[in-house]
Length: 482
Ligand code: 6PG
Image (cartoon, rainbow, N blue to C red; front, side, top):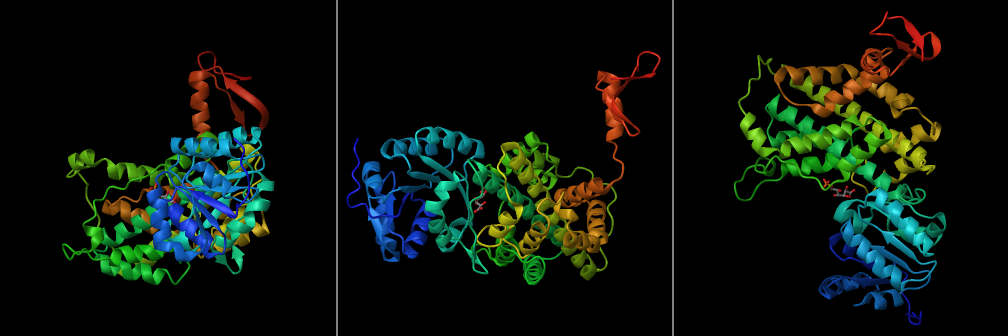
C-alpha cells in the first residue's frame, strides 16, 4: 500500500480513546499540537470531539490508513490501549501502514520485557518503538503527567519536545526525560508503581494504627494526614488520603472508607516489580510486603474463617496519643525512605543487567511532579544522587541517614507497640528489619552457608582466607579447599 503524505497535518496521533487516551489527546491539543484521533469504535472519537473539540485542533479518522495518512513525518503515534495482546494487535496494524523512521509510542503499563521484544522487532522493520511509562492517572494525563519514555535516543529528538510540552513542570523543569534504550521506560514505570504500592501500604498501616491503636475515627485521621501534608511527608498520596478519609457515604452517612470492602485489588505492576526484583536478586521487601498485603486482604474466605483466632495477651493502648502520632509519622517517613531506596536499588540492578545506563537523579527529577508518587522528599533524593550518582544505598546519603537517625526510636516503638497490640504492620516491620539487616556487622547467613555445605557440599568462604572451602561433614570433619 502506498501512503501519500498530502494533507498530513497532525503532529501526533493517539489511538485508544478510553479516559487516559482521551485526556492525553486533549492535553496535547491544549498545548497547540494538532492531534489525529483514532479508536476501534468511532463512537468514542466522535464523543471526544463533541465534548472537547474546543480544546484544540483534532483530526477525526476512522481507519488506521486514514489515521496514519493524517500524520506529519516522521509519524508519531501514541498507543493508549490495554497492556498485553491488544497492544500487539494495534502495533501490527500500525506498523503495516507506517514507514521507516516513523515512531510508535506505547503509553500503557506494558511489561518491560514485552517492550524489549517489540522494540527489537520494530527496529528490524526500520520503525522506532518507544515504551513510555505515563503516570498521574486520569487527572495527570489531562493536566500534566510524569512521562518516562524509553526507546532509541534518536526518536526522543522528534518526540521529546512534544512530550515535554504536556508533562507536569516543577521549577520550570518538565517531568519527562529520555530514560534509556528499549524497555527501560516501562521498567522504570514498573518500579515507580512498586514504590506506589509500598507507599500506599505504609499509609494504610499508619491509618490502621490510628484507628485500632488510638481509636480515632476517619475524620480525625484525615486531620492528621492533612497536617502531615504540610511537612516532610508532603505528597500526592498523603494529600488524597485525607480526601478519601473525609468523604462521607451518601447512602449511610458514614465515612466512605468504613463502607468500602477491605480487599485491595491490583492490576499487576506491583507484582511484576517483585518478580523482576526476585530475578535481579534485589530485596524490595517494602514493595513485596505491599503486594502480599493486597493478596492477603483479598483472601476473603480465608480471613472470614480466621476471625476469632487467639490474639494472646494484648498490651494497653498507647497512653500518650500525641507521642504515638509523632512516632507513626517518623516510622512512615523512615519506611518510605527504605521503599524508595529499595526501588532505586532495583533500578540500578536493571540498568546493569540490561546495560541501560539509567541516571537515578534524572528519575527523581521527573517524579517530583505529575506522577502518583510525587512528593516533597523527591527533591532530597535528587540532591542525594546529584551529589553521588553511585550511592551504594539512598539510606547512606547524609540527609536520609540523619533523617533515619532522628526517626529510629519512634520507628522501633511503632513496630513493637503494633506487635504488642496485635495490629499488623508488615511494611513498617519489614522495612525496619531491612534497615537493621543492612547495618548489621554480621548476619546469620554464615550459618546458612554452614548448613548448605553440610547437606550439599555447597562450600563457603572464610573470613580469614581467600577461596572456597568445604568441611568433610560425614568424614573426619576436617576442612578442605574446594
Ligand atoms: C500511575 C498509576 C497507574 C495505575 C496503577 C494502578 O502511575 O498513574 O500507577 O498506572 O493507576 O497501575 O495499579 P493497580 O490497579 O495495580 O493498583
